Length: 384
Image (cartoon, rainbow, N blue to C red; front, side):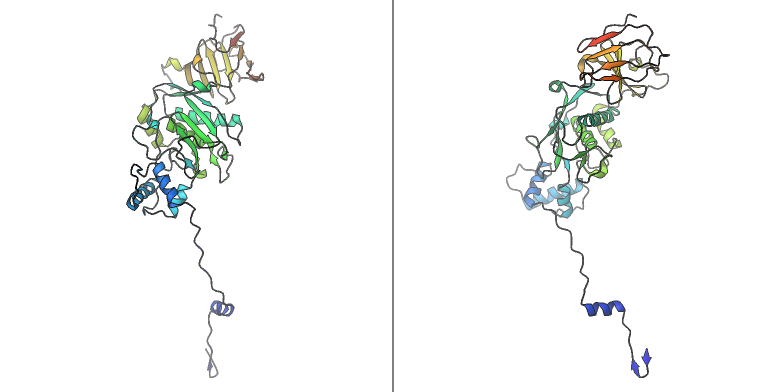
């Protein structure tokens, strides 16, 4: 533009202001590289099955191949370098079992029993024992849906098939290198870090905490013989994160466990017209009780059945094989009919009283005399 004889030029105001102030915008600084040395990374790769340690000398090519295997399993960019993504993944909370187990390793075992008992011998610091046990019950029940195996809690830790321990430190022979392995399975022994911040998903959502149900579900999978999966939607994925607190088995989990044990024979819920009489509750009973987890236990002779939501979910099962911690030392039963609106009363081993739900859905005959059931003895046959 020209005013009179003098040309005037207008520059963008942002350029003028920048030149006057002398301020130049700096590019954002890259995030700090996670603190994980090459030595620790090499040990990590060896511990979790990516690097063969039979050779005393590990070459750069050996390390690159191991990193490529790790990146492939964890679905990371395949660079073969100890880059940021690799370091960050190695520092995540995870299971302490190897990702690439040796053929014939201990977690390749298969159980040849239809009933497996379990016991929790020690507990974490931050969650009440009752909630820990309920979470374990739910995890075992989730696996029961895919298996012809019943999991029963027992107070006899020495004789339990599966024992769960919360320890102050990793068990002897642990693969944990970074200190981030918070759960591990050795044979049928499940170890979890006692001082770790566990949560009961989804009630708690602390970023630095881990979901206890997810850990139980994962480690039980190892006890059953399953290895780690590279699929992030699988309960057997080795990394424990707050975002994948899965509440059920994936299709690949079900396929994997049934590949070991076969397809489940029968379901917890009987179909109409079913002739599977062994799952039905007997017409006459000796005792009925309700546990803290809302399951109803029905006793007849030396067997018992487990109900939930008025359906048989387990049974008949032999009474002598298991006595859960919540099992009462004495149980008294008064016969009730379908017309009765009363409840049955029992005392547990702590001496506190409890009541079971109404039993209008159970066929129990009138006039049956009260019976006392002593711990460890068979129930007397019904003679009414």
